[in-house]
Length: 154
Image (cartoon, rainbow, N blue to C red; front, side, top):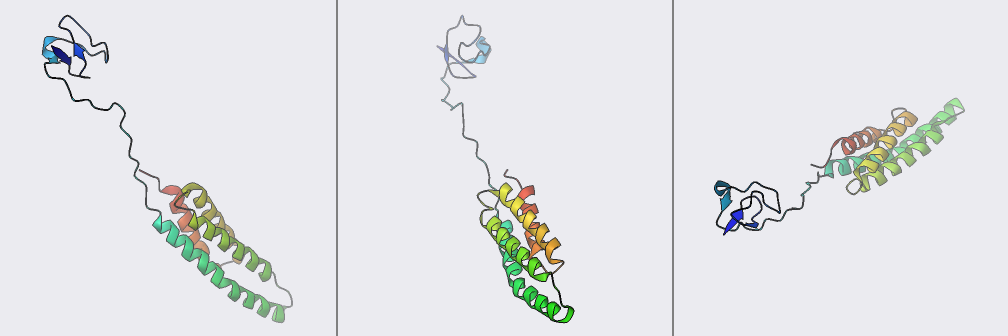
């Protein structure tokens, strides 16, 4: 009794090809011992990248952005008293909203890295542009967003 060395199927001596795998059967490529059954489909293991740097940078950037809101409000009041007009209140509102969007993006970066990366980059860029340099957390949000978009699962 012979067995195919490719798939372990039992073959007869007069067979030229295995009827299961199509492998060539000759006396020198057949075995007298059955092969152990190897599952043909093995689950592919996907290694997930740790998203902790993006999470930490996003959270720190969002919190720093929210901490600068009172500073920007104070500067807006100061500008209003001495100059008479200010746009810093609107900029402060947008910066606060971008901090909140950044915090939401940071929270979801582990489950949805691409969408969160887009949110983090968006909030970082808009926050930096709007607050004209006062939005220090925007740089951290931007870095976290770029990391979330660039780093891929292995």
